[in-house]
Image 1: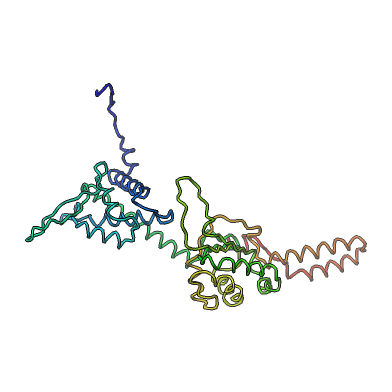
Image 2: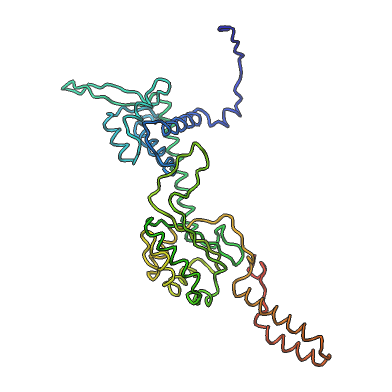
Length: 366
């Protein structure tokens, strides 16, 4: 009892302790929350919202340099000169000024870092060094790094699989393939591209090759200026972006490789006219480089709408021809005799037989 406050004893259940990740899990959460808090401090300057994850990962790697494995396998803190730790922060690409971060992490209520003065032999020069505030931080940092590296490896393997096995991607639905890509471009190029996109929409002859190929359900280009990205919360800092962005959305038929090769061989002039304004675009005619570029700027489309998932553009056109022919014979049949109708029906079947086909999942073997 202290000042009238009664603290009742309590028990932490094993399930609760385990769900929190044990000691290491709770220390990792603490470290992450403190690094996130540091980003919001005045000394941190302006760390872009898109770069906050990288900033935290960078400082995690800096702190991990203070982790030392002993000969018996245990993990403890190491002692490293402050200047060496500062250079490591620069090496890791951390944007926050190191001395300000060191001061923040060494504050008494945090004790993530602590300063240690070491005498250099034989000059007895005093060198200011840093170590972790406690050995338990060392083991937690080691586990945090291992978790992060495993997650990164899993992510890299996933993207490698998605890029090499396009048929299993979530943006495949029946015969329709959804493609989304985002490319950066310098702001002064945006007005030029807007004019070109307007002209391409007005001059119908420029769309002849596109219509002839009949593998694109729809395609849409969207330009987002660097100042147009939304701010969703008062706590969110407005990003200071260097580039405007060109976003391409389309529903296509065929495999990814087939679509890219069609872009490269048949539609290269139009593709170059639009995408050439994007940074580091290699040109559509250089097929291999073009595919590599698109793979690097494309992202998986998890949710999208397609009107005819089990029909290609050719299937849709065929259906329109069948429907038009059926409407014509239905209208004409009102004045036909049975013999005339029989003859007209046979002519109808012969006319549309090449347009009759299955457009279901069964046809795809699914």
